[in-house]
Length: 150
Ligand SMILES: [Zn+2]
Image 1: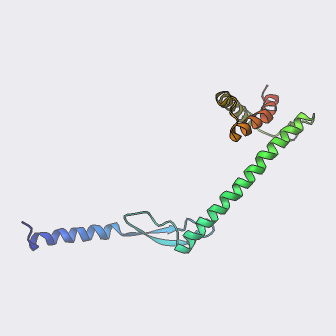
Image 2 (image 1 turned 30 degrees about the vertical axis):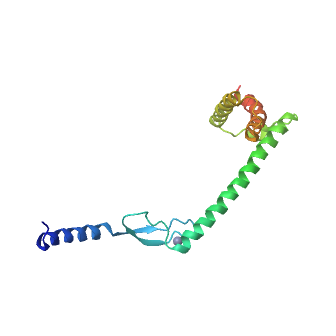
Image 3 (image 1 turned 60 degrees about the vertical axis):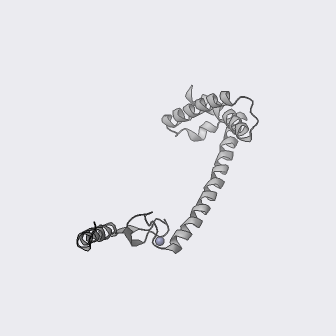
């Protein structure tokens, strides 16, 4: 059935397709601290995102460091929010420093607190640490929100 005379044009077409699929594109390294231009070979498989293997490994490490830094500051932020709300309970007005806060921000915060109320009703008396944290956060934040939205 298949003779050399009719397989040759097919092989030629396949070669042309492969050439068309290995197109080159200018791109920039996905590592924020690099962003060097490089030529990316477009083809099957995962697209090359970094200018080099060195950059890919460095980016993995920097991503881990950035995530742990973010977690650290999120913890600090959460603690500071609780502390600020606690000042309000001591008779000081935490709101005095935040008069510039947009009404829309307060409304968004009120909506979030309202949703957490719903979640807490669903959670019930669960002693899970996350549930306890959520209850503590809700208890601390809701008086501040009520002060500002009523
Ligand atoms: Zn790079």
